[in-house]
Length: 113
Length: 113
Image (cartoon, rainbow over all chains, first blue to last red; front, side, top):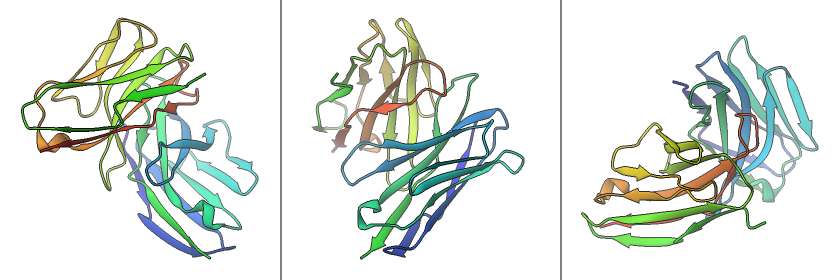
């Protein structure tokens, strides 16, 4: 089955700096890669996703890039703000078999004011 | 729409007790799943269902049962609780295919003594 690895496990940045979180996946059949943000005590919520026929997607301060050849994808947050502090999870899934999301282990992002 | 709802929010069990975690969605989603979240391990799939009457095992199914008698409801049963089942449990749903947005419920925090 799919295996997703996520790095780093913790990331501390100064307000206004950029943050980058990287994930690798193992199943070449995976074709959907969402990113979720989870604030303390809350449910995970989708912030951005990318499909395998696209190399990059941007939504205001958030962008995701995908390299299918290398089987890795990354989340980029620019001009970080204290409210960006949360745990971020990447995930991957093929549209075959279980079609279930396999999640990375999460990155705790701390934005220092 | 209430989205994905879960009850209870918190539960404390003694080893050997059984209980059912409830999950419901009002979005007419075909695909529903249960995850457990443990520190440093992301979200791991317990069971999933692609539609009413159809369920299958995920990554960590031992000690849990599910059923899907209606499209709306997907309860998770702990047969004989063990301390290793102490975790936060999230129910999730999506319309159908893997690329549909997956929505999470608010979670149930379970402690087994």
